[in-house]
Image 1: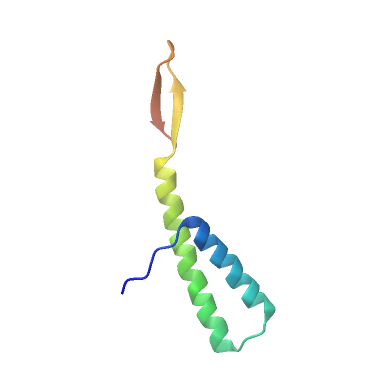
Image 2: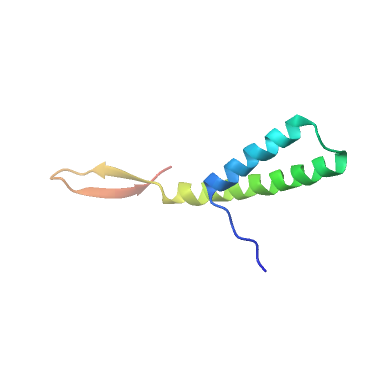
Amino acid sequence: MAKKSLSLEESLQRLEEILRILESGDMNLEESIKFFEEGMKLTEECQSHLQKLEKRVKVLVEEGNEKYIEKEMQ
C-alpha cells in the first residue's frame, strides 16, 4: 500500500514534532536516527511542495484600461 503524501502544512507540523522529540533526548541512538531519517525525507518533500507552489505564483501586472496579464514570478 502506498504511503499517503502529506500536505506542506502537515509535513511542517510533523517536522516540528520530530524536532521536539529529538531535542528531548529521551530515546536511544537507533530511535534518534529513525526520527532524523524521517525528518530528512519530510524536508525533501517540503522543498518539492515549495518548488511546485513557486511555479504557480503569478504576478498580475496592470496594462491599462483595467486589463491584466499574468506574468511568471522571477
